[in-house]
Length: 85
Image (cartoon, rainbow, N blue to C red; front, side, top):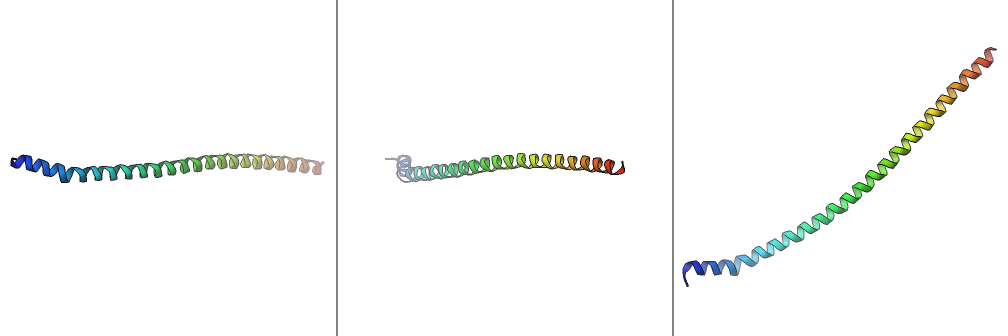
């Protein structure tokens, strides 16, 4: 065998399995990270939906309070008018 063939065999025998192992480890790590990111994305989506629902509820409460305030103002004006008559 020539030096080139010996070197090639050495690389195939020792480095190729190590590279395959490293590649498999990187693939496993990517799968774990993808799973974690998917879980976090689902949680963020749930939190966003909940925040949106609460935002809608707060806006409704503010609208009700504005209506109540307007009614109180109208009643106060009517009572003031009645007292002056």
